[in-house]
Image (cartoon, rainbow, N blue to C red):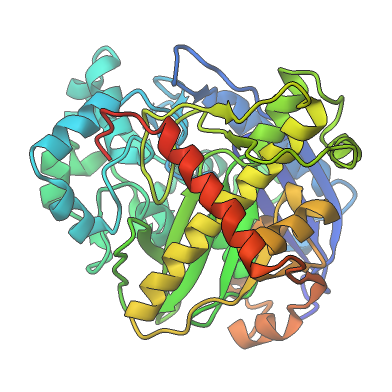
Length: 503
């Protein structure tokens, strides 16, 4: 990495917190600041965020992370963001008209059911690589246009802007000068033509979305404008943007077909690089863009688990099993082996490969000797079993496509600091698990993208050479045991699936 200017600032705006990390010339995180994000639940299955709270937290985190460093020494800013979460705002004032509808939100279940009943899933999947689900932005945007007073008329008049969180932050940081998104975020809206890499006019018509309210689509490494001077002391260019999971894959140097990473945060998202051709999943995984850098565009297959670290948070906050998440390891150490005990944490439905937004969570196989320790272990095992769901589906898709199946799993996110969890993940998936030295790979990926855009890095090969695992975990249980436990998991999932699921 070139030494001048010596710093890169990464924004990682996630589902439960906003974070900024300042990286030095050696790509070491030298300063960081994080602020928790309030979760708003207006109704059952609805999840919202306050957009002004996101904006103010982002600004505060950037200022704190860069405190004591001359702003002229920051070469560029990179942004990674929670994807699919949707908002609309007034172009003139920059004020949002409604809370952010978060990716976890299920309010558009009925809309999705009607789309499927019309036989539109084949068409939509063929254009976007996505399945019809409330998860994605299109039905959220349609809901906002129909339910926010005056929004439809104002959108048609060109007064309103739509965006995912990256677009919102870019718009605010540049003082309204730039309304843009990158290909990775655009590919999660269900309005984006994956093959043409552009907004799809037929999809816009289907969802009644005015083209003029959409952001401009740019590469992940591109010119996204510069911050207003008063925000950080000087105008700093924004040169890298990606959805959080693609940013994490970039931070994990998943640059070759077959490279796979899983990020364990609130949810878990596994993404495998499939190369330069648009992939097709036969297992209801998602086709998406992995990254777009200069003339190179990589695609990926992705699987999404809606609840991963979220179940740990629930055990502590709602059931009082522990005060802080780190205490779960000590609790699990006391767990007895109870055959047939499974926890399916479908709090907001099931993601890939089931896509059942009507499913709800359950603990099955409870006996009198099951207590907090046993339930906590079943909860962590559920994250591992769901990861195997994704890896098995990916392996089948990759094999069908003639691409080498993934065999090593690169992991990151808050859960992987727990050695017990990483070992259990290896045991229950049968994959070698590699943990990077720096677990904040989402911010790292955003910084790498900004570094490429500012000239701090020559190319992706320079980034690849810097990747190194901090520790590996290999499977330590017999294949027969692993498969027997997994059969029990599949039976548990079948028991909680909704009979009227449209997935």
